[in-house]
Image (cartoon, rainbow, N blue to C red; front, side, top):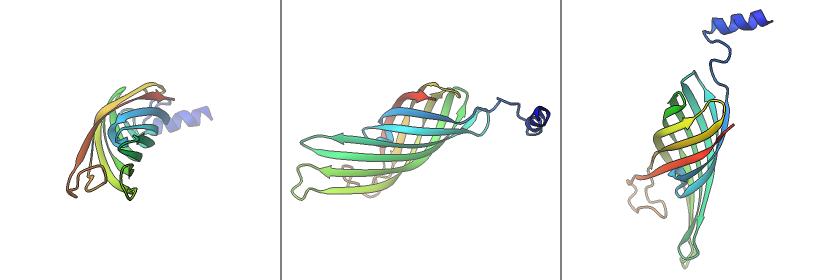
Length: 165
């Protein structure tokens, strides 16, 4: 059996342990896809020693008694390239719910809009400290709390800190 496993690894050009296994990350993001902040879970699959694919879901909440309340649900897919220090590029969607506290009609609305992001990530293959920073852009259009021009694009820098396990 060991001979068969060794032969299989050589046949595919990979030695056992060369490509890292899947990893999971829990992290907090300031600004970015969650608008103000978000708590996130991300799953990483490695395609090769340097290329990785990431699937993330998170949630963010922000509220003030005088202005409004927000709920955000960012969902993103991205790819990164590098060793521990990686360049990252991705896209996703943000469900955004906005409620005006002072509005007479209690205006509440939700919208879904696409997001794009690019940045830097520090992530070890097998766990430990996770850092990420970059810029998110989205076509926010006339989403409540944003601009009234449907052609407008908004941007939001982000920084993330968490742990990979």
